[in-house]
Each structure stands twice: as C-alpha cells, then as structure tokens.
Image (cartoon, rainbow, N blue to C red; front, side):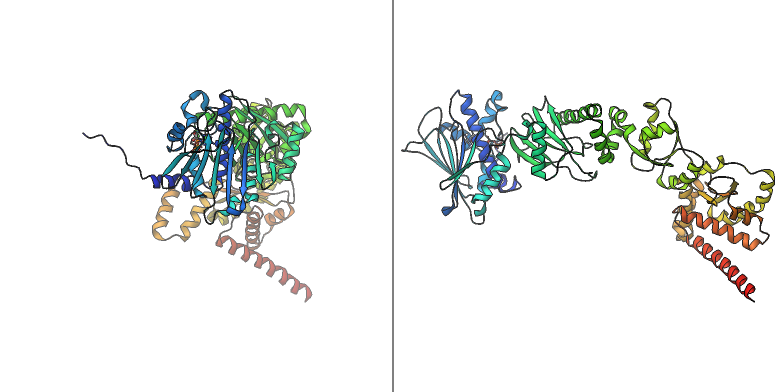
Length: 594
Ligand SMILES: Nc1ncnc2c1ncn2[C@@H]1O[C@H](COP(=O)(O)OP(=O)(O)OP(=O)(O)O)[C@@H](O)[C@H]1O
C-alpha cells in the first residue's frame, strides 16, 4: 500500500478562491479592513497600549492604494506559516482568542487578486524583529525580504489596479465600500487622498442608539419614518439589534432584507432569514458576536445556533407586541391595521399571539367588516363559510335573518375563527353548509305550498340535467327571488359533468369512473323565495311555457349573481327564455296598439 498526497494545482486554487468565492470585486476592501481590525485586536491582546487605527491611502496617478494598520504585524515565521499558506489562519490557532477575530478561514487576502496582480505587504511584528516585505502573486509564488529602513509596528498592504479594475481604486468607490463594510467598526478607519483625510466611521452603531435616535436614523437612511423600534437581543448569539416596524403593508412574497453585522462589520444587507418568516412587518439591523459566517462571508452558517438565535429574536418581537398592547394601545391598533395580513399569519402559528391579536383582527361578516371584539359583542354564535363564494351566496340573506356569518374563505381566516372558543368561552362557531342553508327558512303554509307545488316539480324536471334540486321557502329580503346554493362537492360534480360532455372517449371513461365512485350525487339547491312577488306570479301562472321560461331565468340569473361559471347549455337556456319574454312583451305591445 502506498500513502499518497493529493496534488494541488496552486494557480487553480487561488483562481477559485479569489475570483469565484465572492460575488463582488469590492470585497477586497472588506477583507483588508477585517485583517487590519483583527491585527489591532491581536496587538491589544498582547497588552500593548497604542492609538489604534486603520488608514487607507489612495494614489490616483498610479491607480494604487495602501491599507495600513498599527496592529500586531507579522514575524518571518508567521508569514511563512499563515500568510503564505492558504487556509491557515492565526485566528484559529488559539481557541480562546478565536472569538475576538472576524476572520477565521485564512483565505480572505486572496480576494485582493481579483483587482490587483500582486500583493505587496510591508510588516513589522509587535513581537520585534526586522521590517519585512512580502510579495505574493496569483500563480502561487512569493518573495520575502528584510527591509533596511525603519517602519512602525503594524502592516501595510499595497495593491495596484489590474486593467478594468481602476474604478475600485478611485476615491468615491473606495469611500463607498469602506462606509458600507466599516461604518460601525470600533477601530477608527481613515481615508486619505493627497492632503485630504477623513474618518469613515464616527457614527454611533444603530443598535446602540436610543429609540428616538434610532427612529431618526431609519428615517434618514430609508426616507420613511418607522412606526416604532423594537430592541432585539439574543444572549446565545451575542446579538444586539433593532427592528423597525414598517409604516406600510408588505406582501408575504416580498423578499425580506435585514442588515446584519458580524463583530460590527457588515455581512449582508439583504439577509432574509435571520428573523422568523412571520416577522415580515419589521426590518432588522443586527450585530452578532457569535454566529459563524460562511467562507464567502455573505451569509451565516445555518447551524443549530443560527436557528436558536432566530427563535430568540422572534421572541423579542413577540414580547414587544404583548407589552405594546398594554403600554400604547393606539400604536398597537395602528400596527394591527397596517400589518393585518402578517399578523394573521403570526396568530395562526402561535397560541400566545393568537390570544393577543384575535379580538383586534378584522373579518368580513354578513354585517360588513368588523373587528372580532365587535363581532363577539353582537353575537356569540357564529357561522363561518369555507369559501368566499359561499359567503357571497349567503351573506345578504343571512343578514336579513339576523345571522352572523363570517367569511372564512380568505387565507388563515377559517383557522383563526374556528379556534375562537379557546379564548372566548361563550363563543360557539359552526361551519355553515351553504347547501342546507336555505332549509332553515320559514316553511310555507298549506295553501301556498299547494300553489307552489307545480312550479317546484316543473323546476326539478328542468334543472335535473344541471344537478340542481328546488325548494320553496319564505324569507327576507323580499327582493331576492331565488337563492342558488352549492358547495365545493356539488361544484366538482358540475365540472365532472361538463368534462364528460366535452371529453374524448377515453377521458370520458375516466370521468365516468370518477363520477360513479362518488358516494352520493351532490345536488345544488335553488330555493324560491315566496316572499317575492315575481316568484308568486310565476307559481300561479297557468301558461306552462311562461312558467318554464321564468324558472329558467330565475335559475340563470341566480348563477350570474353568484358569480358561478355557466355552461354553454345554461347560456343557451338563458338566451332562449329571455327571447321568449321579449317576444311576449313586444307581441303584447303590438296587440295593445292595434
Ligand atoms: N494586516 C495584518 N496584520 C497581521 N496579520 C495579518 C494581516 N493580514 C493578514 N494577516 C495574517 O495572515 C493570515 C491570513 O489572512 P487572510 O485574510 O487570508 O485570512 P483570515 O483573516 O485568517 O481569515 P478569513 O479567510 O476568514 O478572512 C491571518 O490569519 C493573519 O495571521
């Protein structure tokens, strides 16, 4: 057996890590900033007292820039071991210290090869020794030489723009990148070109601002004033942050963009999953000390810690809402009003939030849109429909019967309403079966029943082919002549019947099998309202042709009013009956004018 080592194509690996790991050439600024800050941290750990800083200087004439820090610097041995060895990092060596550093993978410096054909690094170690110059190339070769001249403790990296990358060495671009990544680093970061020098990071970190300051900060940076600021904390994640409550409604589908910092350095300004999915009415700005980044440093590793931290941050938002409902009911109401869709999603998922919110949420009822608290004041017995269509079919009639029907057809509403008895003891909730809904109306007396019987029989015969049965009752409001009720099962049956008519033989057979498999044929219901004068007239007419046309018109009109799709057969029937009435009317007119 021979033990062999993998062979590494060094140039290929460097190309992979520098050109393909990161999504944007500008990340070299982040990597150099991070190395500078880490070096300062390392020197502080040695007990040195010094005025820490990271200085960036631009030399536009030669498209060159330098990054200097007065951190720990490197000895020759350290250069050999860490700088010149890909994947090695001083920052992992000492597990105690690892938590203090931003870097950990030992590949960050390679990001410089995207914009520069060479890295020149001048360093003097805080542990003493000679100043050294290291030059590295993307083909994997490097040189080290001792410098004669004196340099201060720390490290300076020089880069020169490759063709097409000159813009990354211009003032506005470097300044923008430094601000993006480094605005909240604790070590002062200075940018200099010629004699002009300015400090990049003198602003207070947003997560350390007071509430009024945070509101002003968000207003200035997003041009919208947030409704409120929620403080975020997670002990296990070493997280402090703020979430601002958006002053406008956001859709469930909108991608969330939370701004996340790792040890005060920007990791991502569009992280979607650091807060729970239900929290889409807030935008977060958070800083974490403990979460681990991925190697590209654009996201966190999604390990158990990550999910535990997300739960803790979610709990902060919940706690805030619970307290707010007591402390500032007016603001609480405004948040509920603007973000009701989001809050309904939250309430479905969480019992505590359900109890907190349910009375403040608005539902569509037979009496119009109402808050649940109002609904319960009016009635404790509610009927909820399973679909928007069913609600439309029954709501007007239900109101005339003084029935509280709630539309359960929108996302989450059915779930929310059904769980009501858990928080409101005297509430009873039943699911309204729109098919049997009409049966509860007042029966006719014996005489009216007899009078209406021929029309009912006629109607059953005519509408059998549309799977519709008829009944007659007396109900309010009188201006509704008929009520057509169906439910999903009956609708499905209608659909099957339609396809059977249009299907080719093979599909027709499949449809027949499906249909025969159904236990009982579900019929839709056409309920005539004997309280309506037209219905009474139609029932009393002796002309069978007119009665037929009336039934057909009542039926098709009910379909139209209820937004039910009409088959070709039903449309034809509506046209025929309308024409018959027109004829009759026009004939009558000609006879009268004779
Ligand atoms: N400015 C600096 N001062 C002192 N040491 C440095 C400096 N820059 C780099 N080094 C040394 O070089 C090593 C490799 O740096 P590199 O940026 O490639 O990786 P890293 O910072 O350790 O990790 P990451 O890949 O996560 O950024 C570092 O661990 C550190 O020892």
